[in-house]
Length: 362
Image (cartoon, rainbow, N blue to C red; front, top):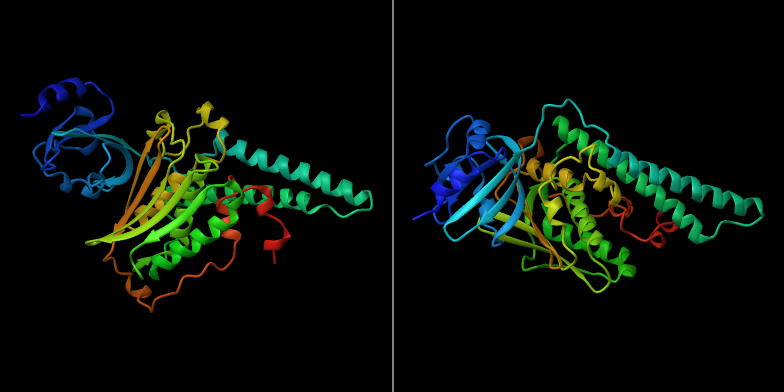
């Protein structure tokens, strides 16, 4: 009936943990030795929901990555679906280190921002010495590098807190429709020069959920940032929100270049210090790691499906019936984007310098 015995034999020597499921019943039909060793037992014959959140299997895609929890441990999971067998290639995210390592990838991002600040400051002071005021363009470039530096520092701090399990989490009843709509409108306005069409869609007039608004905002800005890096003029990015049963699904879809397949396996991990190819990319490599951590704080699942030349789909699924802890049992806290700075920081790697300057400063 299944090709499980042959697949189990082929995958038995693979060092990565691999679990095979019946595609219809989600019963585990085999686990390779690496999976049994990582779990501490043989899960063969058990329902998949006993060890993982089966929401990760509900995606329509045939191949995608997801960040989820298996037996209380963070894991990056590559899902490959066939008509009869679904394979889960699992990389457990190591939490043995006491703190986040600052890699060359992060140092490169910091160095670029500092060098840009120095160059911009020199240009501004040179103009002042000539008896003139710096142009709006030069001031905008200066502020752009400042926000890029701030973004990297905030990301390093957030990633370190997630690594330590110390990221502050303050859920309150909030309207996700308003949050997503307001944030999308600001992102679309600031990114108008890119030529990328950015929109929000939902059939829900209101959707109240127990969330940490600032953390959800940070997660969404990281997703917008990734999409904008892989799209260009003429492409589109759509944020959508829906409720299905006891789940809320926030989706970000783009029709851009897609994430390179060789990078997909590591998208939820911290960047490695020896990853030379990462140094050629923009950003600090922490965005999806932070988004995964925020999703877990909300007891949610993050899935990413990407195809070269066809774009990327990201799904954030969280429980709709989660109630805040007693100390947060308070009236709904209406969401409002208090200032543009969070968006200017979150999108500093993709916004043009003309989006910055004194116009958004107090």
